[in-house]
Length: 200
Image (cartoon, rainbow, N blue to C red; front, side, top):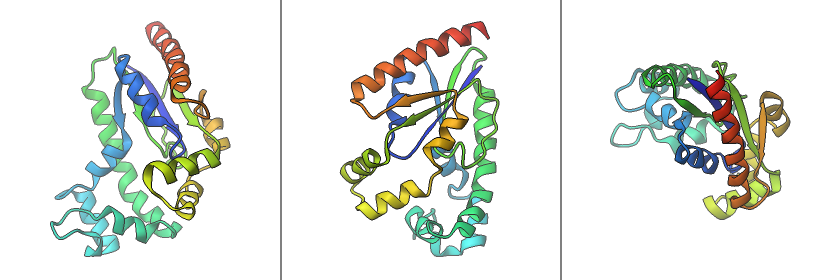
């Protein structure tokens, strides 16, 4: 298996890159999807979240109210760390289970927004970050997700810096350009990944 870690700041374009690589033959595993599984109804993860933050973070149907939980932890680093201590180890376990189920010749793209923040230490063959300037990402968050300027800035400030992501990465994709050009760059990098995977 050839394992690519794909990261980048919020609204940088990770999803577009991952989708194109899947079209080209990659298998994507999305850490955000695994994070939801980790605290799904009936799981030990959800029970621990309730124990830490009370049933106030549940919807009437017993599932996690993600918006309510985000409101609790978003501006409180201590509470956010407590939540991450519950979720992150479970996400890693779920990811490793997925990896084990895949054919050995797979090229796997593990899309993980908090790769740096969570200290993800999986045996990546390559780490790629997708980056765009902060003002571009703010505009995208306002236009595509309906956030206010203040909320967009807060979301970005809650993530690590582009420099820290770049320091962790083996390759950087610039998304401060048209989607067409970003995907062209992504395709060129994919060809390199395929070549390296064949030589592994």
